[in-house]
Image 1: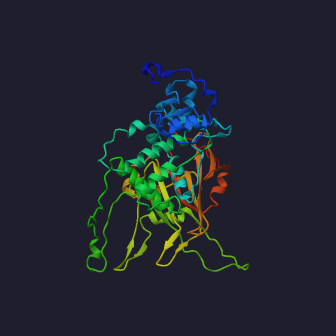
Image 2: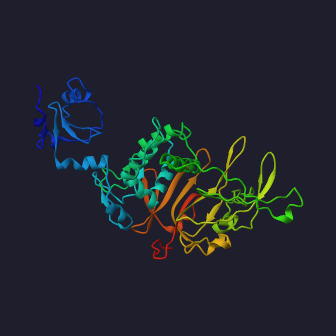
Length: 427
């Protein structure tokens, strides 16, 4: 029969004690709907509308209002207050998931659906950058941004925000999260350049993803600035040599590795070389020259930094592509995880404007194995406890800081240390 609208809302449902996570997603509430038939055939009576977050009892078709259901809606759509966000990096308290496992919010695994570990590692790294994370935890920050009709790129923003809120949810059902919806948006928005079923390159994905987010949030594409024509007069006498200066912004700094040796030791094992971080940072000291070759010409470049951002990304160039295959350089980079001072890489005229030039590592993405068959894992610093954790898909383990430097680091995120900060990272 028909129900009066006033009678369809009930705070008492006899089926609440029978709730179990079915996993089915039937639609509708009418007599011929999938949900109605599902409720009759399987005696599943409590249904949640994923859009309105309202619960209904079928086949009776009334809304259920009960505070005991709030945990379910919070898992589906976690919300964070400004006060909660402000204390995220000061919390050292473990949360207990619905299944009984304990976890630190923000340090939770991501499902590897097939070959998406490259994306998982990058997403985990970005979730550990507080200003970026905080922006996406509050949906109100971007909910009203106007986009052209039919623009699919804003889907990336929505899905990334949802993923951030799930990763940092202190009331999760399980101690891991599925990135499936986020990755579906990546596949769609990248026109299948990045996929779930095929291994991708972490640096290429990071670059595309950050630029795509920036554009979707209303950012503009920067035009490449032409050379400013600051040529040295003494070199103008010979047209073969001309020097020009170009100033540009960067998303990350590419650090070049020395060529790996081809010889083997007495046991016929390839020797894996090691290089200090400061040796490959010398590229940016303003005097080191690096040769670049194109099909048209050869030229030398020198680099120097003019401004240091609050967060700095290093991409260690491990892969070299040619017409036939991709080669990987296994060189180990020796780096301290704290107190890396970059003042000497700033040009002299801007050094005085930088009060703080020291950085601490907060995320380290590692590539293991061969270029095409390898896997990704990540080391992240939990700011609240000062401890390091290794995440590889669903696996989450703590790790000593000394072990991090023994890995084949590929992407690193460094945080500039401000004057009032104290170091909690240990050795």
